[in-house]
Length: 399
Image (cartoon, rainbow, N blue to C red; front, side):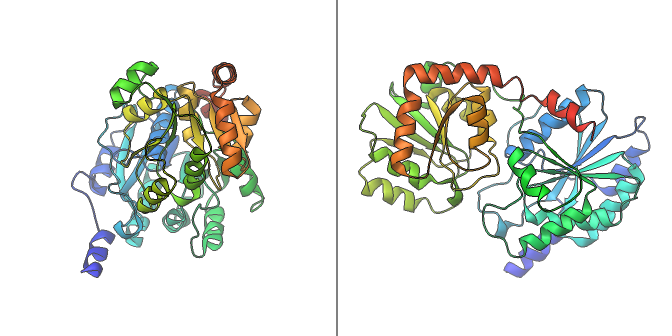
């Protein structure tokens, strides 16, 4: 049965997927040459990559650059995806066209995509890279591209958070596929530069513009059914590398009954081990868990209801949670790892802690102090003007 499902997924085309013939037929009616053809997750796929791709392409259109997105008919095969769904129910405000064309596990598809791209002949193709599963389709698509098309790798993560067999070898294929690279953080840029002599433009993760408007703290708490306590939040997908155990243990060391921790997001590993730890530490009255994927309004409410956001990651390249917190003017407490600490230290937008639950508990109490918290908020308001998509787009247009 598993083999049958696997074969079906190789040739999977979801019902609302555009056919190659339809695309090529419509292509003949297009007047403007495409400057950037972006290969990435986009609607109907959910998550931070998809959201930020929408912000990127909307801003490219706003700046007068004709842009299209080619996204996936199949992104993650079901046996590689730990979540409940890969798809979003939210509507996006988009000024660009999205075409669902790429199957990550079908080599015949990759050849077709390459031929299609050659007929479109964009000035540049952007391969957005965040997972080794993308290497082979990108490599084979790139292999048959017209050499006049410039290929740019837009890199979110370089070292995968979990171990992947042959990852270093796969990354070499990706390095050979692209002419130039753009990294979504200084940390990732440093990692890529160690692996190639090609040009690497190190940028930042901009603040998405398609987010719900901020809510005041009282309204956000009412929306979530929370009482009038002081909340700190850990939000996003729960995975081992994010260091949630350290955060839970730190709550045992915070001797204030008015402070509660919210853990909100879909668990990509067994939730029972965290529930057992909370029970063993007698923290059931101090921790609230919402084990589900958060839509944008729920993310807004959790952040706005909180005094601060905690990122206790064991390792990181960067985090999409940071610009979310900045958008809603919330200070952060982050672990002392590359990819997180640099922004917080530079902008003075929160506290940085070193490894242990004891240090994390101290950092939380420092950050929750009213005067320090207000200072961090003031610094965020000043700093976030730099992290705009307009600034990001102006820089990538020159590469």
